[in-house]
Length: 118
Picture 1 (tube, helix red, strand yellow):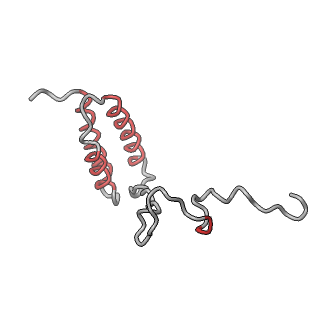
Picture 2: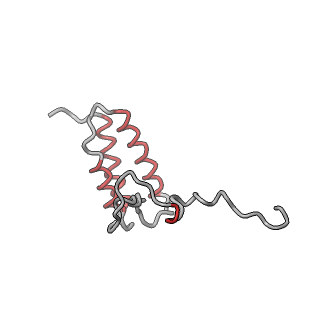
């Protein structure tokens, strides 16, 4: 087996540092492990992506060490209309207008004008 490259050593060092920084912060260690597992299957030849993820990890490490972070969580993509339980819509179909706006910003553009013209 060959020696690990400099980039491999940096990534392993980042992993250890993130785990240490995440001690005592709810959800941090599990999130770090999940993130590294998710990207473990990247090919070694994809250096640009590995370097990008490494830089992103360094920024997250700085945030964890800053003292302002008390916990670590993730943003979860909301389920689409076809994935909601009990929904009979087929994938690719849109909701009816009576279902309300499709996004939080939709419908906010058309505001009523006041009676004095403002």
